[in-house]
Length: 232
Figure 1 (cartoon, rainbow, N blue to C red):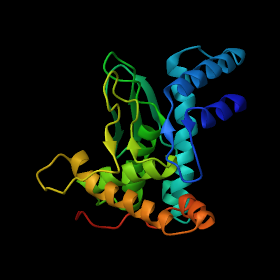
Figure 2: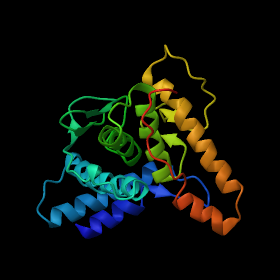
Figure 3: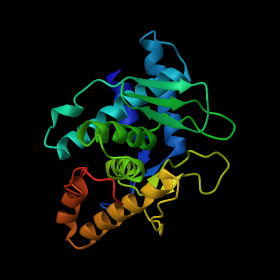
């Protein structure tokens, strides 16, 4: 299982240069699935896409937890087990349940890939973090914080690359957006104002430093925590 986890940590994500964006590599993801299935077969675990998704999400939810924990000074309020359900018999969505927290990801369909992938998982876990730290946060800020965690963990402004099948673009949101906040818009749209600002600030901080400091800025991109406000 350790070897399967190592495979899942590396192959789906490729980088080209010290500050280059990371991108979802669909071929690499399939290779990881194949390697995971091989490892799981040796462990006499069910050889199914659902099981692979469970392993992938166990790895990536742990990684986004550790990312947030480092930036929240080890705040123990997020050190809780959160049930993660994968391969749910539905399509084109994932969701977080407040109150009794859980993370839920849908299976692959004709229109969409399975949603148990790193960027989507990181986004949904962001909802849990915000609920634990600043439970009054609602709407667009909630969505924006989920996207910020996803972008900063993976080092890419793309949310959900490869999510949409046979579509160009295949992603669902992007940090390099020009969205202007409108109080009547849907909350995922509203979140683009906050996540877009955060991504562009991160990018500017990296550009304003030399190569070594740029790497450090990428590692700790924005030392901030959710603020107790619902204003955009």
